[in-house]
Length: 96
Image 1: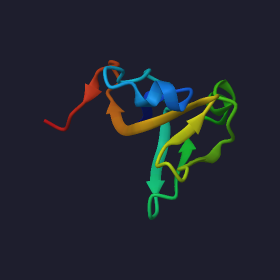
Image 2: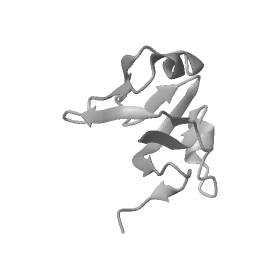
Image 3: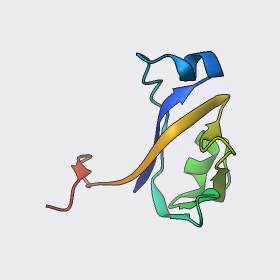
């Protein structure tokens, strides 16, 4: 399972540009779980603690949802995020 961040921007000028959907962010994982409560933060736990270090995170960590409903990660704010599974073969699993 991975947490994907996208529709990222650095500042309000980038965010306000109508033709700019923003930048794709990292696909964080593999994770054991992802959990959100009341849209306040996104909690997760890495399957392998060594993978957490690649992102500068801890084995069990969270990304806070800001007042502007974005997640800030590595100097970028992301307006969208998703959670998805990946098969052993590296394909996105859609449950079908």
